Image (cartoon, rainbow, N blue to C red; front, side, top):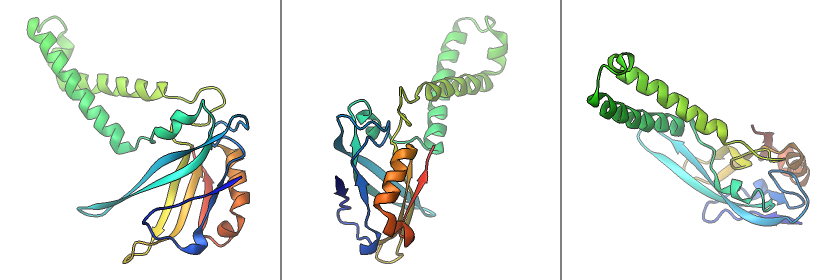
Amino acid sequence: MIVNVPLGPVPINSEATFVFPSSRCCNCGTTKAIFIQDQNTKVIRYFVFAGTEITFELPLPVCRDCAQSLERRVPTLFHKFMMVAVVTAVVCLILLATLSQNPSRIPFIANNLFTSSVAIALTLVFAFYSLRRPSGTQTSFYQPVRISKLDREFVSGAIKRIGFGFTNPVYLREFSKANAPALKAGLVTATKSS
């Protein structure tokens, strides 16, 4: 079964249409107990002082074990940087409160408060993201289908070309086969994502 993808109010080149095969889970690849669930996928393009955001509702085949991964957006470098900044501030406040009781208790941290806070924050954030790994046969803890490329017309904003990244190589092959004419024309691309 193949599901056509509605893009809502965003105009798209009629030749750049695509379908998602529903024969297997797009994350783990199982063919058992598959259902269609929308994956809310955002594409943000930044300009000098502004940006645009398009939200795609991609109807993807998924199993019960992988359904939650469709809701987890892939963290960007900016998100990770902001997380380090927030954790650094919290750690710094905790260390200040601790050291205010007895500043000579840990002299190295008292003399290097900011550096120590950043080091602890980096360690905590690294550990947090290290624990967020796929389980079992899943290929991704986060959204398994990503939009890797989006070419739009400057004035109308219509989508001319769209590219997808897939974490599951078997599902990537099925998508490529189902969308061979659009891929051959260069209107849709499909690549392996990590």
